[in-house]
Image (cartoon, rainbow over the protein chains, first blue to last red):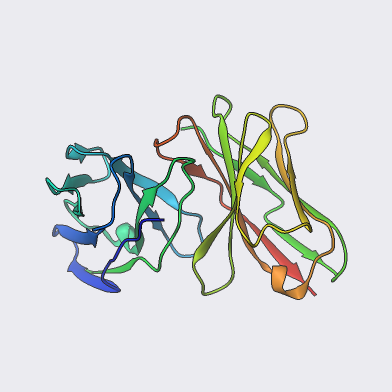
Length: 109
Length: 113
């Protein structure tokens, strides 16, 4: 399974953008790039996903490098509610998600 | 917004007992999954289910585990003879199409004593 590499933690001030990097140098042509987050004591929550093009939704934006070997999740204005562990995951042919340790995002007021 | 519902939210059972964890996926979804998370550890894939059969399972999903979609709406995970190390949060997830985002339930906390 293709692996991803993320920083252990990132800090941000409230109302400022957060850029979460993810490296996936062994990505295959059919792998989708998914981002999920997990708030304390809750189940994982879908954030966004993409294949080749940049994607936007109401929660975030996903910027995918041209060679697809890295991506960046962008939270445009961090709120205290965005404090969570963010997971960058590549899905394989059956769509199972292999969670890593993720990036702990800390948002300070 | 559609939700994945899991019951019970918390289950305490004695070692060696059988437990059934229940999930109601989103109604038009076709792909179903169980994951677990031992306290303080990563979320681990257990099994995926499509077209009324298991499509993939992890090494964790041994003969003690089974899944079923008994009535077209519920999706259950059965652990036949629970061990202390089965204590974890168990999450059900469902998806409409491969590659799309998946919706997770809020989990069942299983405590084996």
